[in-house]
Image 1 (cartoon, rainbow, N blue to C red):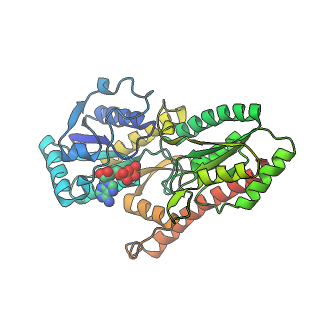
Image 2 (image 1 turned 90 degrees about the horizontal axis):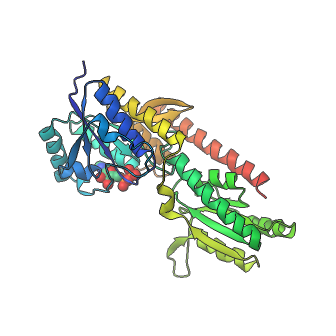
Image 3 (image 1 turned 120 degrees about the vertical axis):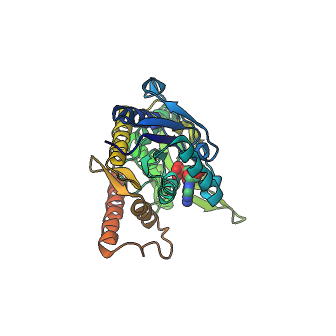
Length: 361
Ligand code: ADP
């Protein structure tokens, strides 16, 4: 028998298609195990402000097809304070909530760790379109976002072809360029620019000129929003727009498009529905096994779990954001395992980027 009578589920941070599928799976799996479920409204702010609804089987009917999140999302700064956390814990106690499953990104997982440390066991499930959590091969929402970008770029390419012009497309991804890398390859972009790989601007401009000279009419360049430069006043600005201007300056008519939040919406793909379902079910299983402070991950196709602190530290390691003392809590074996995860991600990016350079002409 589970020691849990009732759990809460919330979605937090930037929304992602497939969050609803995760909420549905968490709810139905818990109910099937005799555990009641409360849907926390608006991420951690729902815990701080005591805003929640009971979820029954029918409450999550017909949401697997829908983008966004039926529980809504929020960025709740108060939750990060001691007072906010105290209110959140009091809300859980008031409603008899024994554990929380939190669907979101790295900020959401930090919140889940804090909850666990304050006595409410929590598990994280990935929900973020950027695939920017290094510890997992895959985050729920990534496939839908990639396909939405591709759908849009294909349309841009049609009109680029008609008018013999170039279109620079900026896509989301602050520290992680997986969205631009994958969609750049799949859309046949002439150049891809992402934060993790140094961009050879001179070569890209040369390649674009050569391609045009060889008769290529429509050209697409995909750039991650996270690639920035500075203007004449030293202010940080997106590189995507600067690059579009530079391509214009070499005599190729170039338009600029920022896809921004369009990519966050829409009905989730099969991949996202399936992964969200598997991850949601796994999260409940872990809680029922008495485990917490974990994030559900995908590793070489398997749904597994990882300690949240370990996962967040791997992420900082990969993104070059480790702070003093971050590694102090880990032994040499752990650090070796972290380095191996970073290396796997780095290699995958480098190999794909190199391949793209050879065939995307
Ligand atoms: P994401 O989960 O997509 O990365 P955010 O970084 O905005 O999105 O985090 C979502 C929410 O998680 C925040 O609004 C906050 O309520 C909570 N959170 C973020 N960082 C922390 C932290 N260090 N400690 C506790 N809670 C946090």
